[in-house]
Amino acid sequence: MKGEENLFQNHYYMLRPLLSQSQRAQLFTFPENVSEQELIRYYTLSPDDLTFILLQREDHNRLGFAVQLVCLRVLGRQMVAGETVPYALLTYLAAQLHLSPQAFALYAKRDPTRREHSAKIQKYLGLRSLMAQDEQLFRHTVLGQALQTGSNIAVVTALLEEMRSHKIIIPSISTVERLASTIQEEA
Image (cartoon, rainbow, N blue to C red; front, side, top):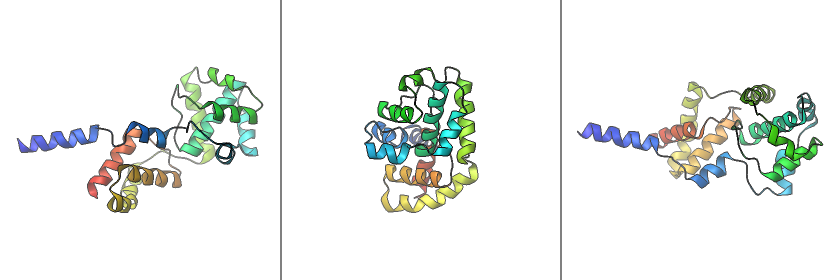
């Protein structure tokens, strides 16, 4: 009976989110209120980026490609189908490409287009997927943070920084939370 109770508690712990909805939004989505300085600093496309983006056919694909590029570069994760992009960011990217921000509404009507673009961008940025050996490394490197703070958001933030520094694509929120939970348990 005791073992079943323990199993239930561990199972429940792994199912419930580690972060609140606002913490998830803070760490995993484009910020809604971006200053002009932040737009310039994080979302200005380089000449190489522009050349790469302009290889895509049609305006909506170029703009969608640019959004995916900055999503992977800045947030470290793939863009999700149907994801909302803040208008200020969309306008800033569109202006660099001499396009209308409304072109984005037509982007990725076919899911394979979004996936194909994502694969091209990952290769361009030198990004790769998370693997089991990475998880082991991160358990070790982030454990110190978990021991010091015990804060869920601090551990997840440290984990995300490690992934970005190793050019690993941020996996789903649930995968990140599962790994952070494992680190928290070890701490």
